[in-house]
Length: 195
Image (tube, rainbow, N blue to C red; front, top):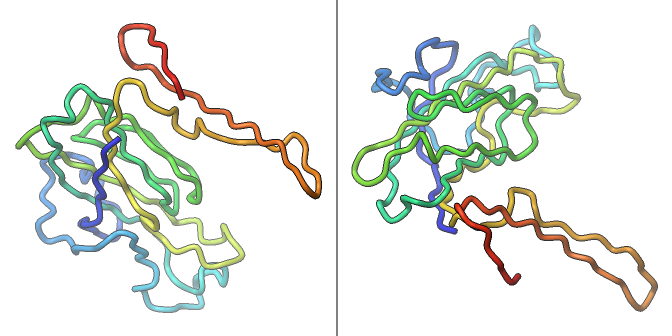
């Protein structure tokens, strides 16, 4: 597996209905580094919830561009978000990838069929909707609050969240550990593998 961190993004507060479009003009947007929380840059106000630290939520848009090495072609390409608060929608090169409610769990999209390899750039757009301010008893922040990574995985690779372990029996001196490892086969043929 090879990876590329997407740390440099452009940000704009409020709704911009066409910002998902690859050719959208974002030249005057604010440049930010992920992780990013737009709420901490807003003024405090009693009109907002104590759960959000009396800071504004609202809607924000993020956009970034990246290129992928030609050598990655033929692999599965994923974009993984470790946390976006909250209600995010994601587009890759103007293709809608999906919506993720809430904001604490890691999620990812398979963008293999939407990306270009080599010198042509790719565009990711993310809409974050944190208008519901009474959604927590603590400060959550608003925005892409954890890292974002593009990964290139061989056709046979570990399934997303496919590795876990259990301890069926535990004593003061000994524990039995069972590891479950699920592999995903995106190749055209059945394959025998050793883990």
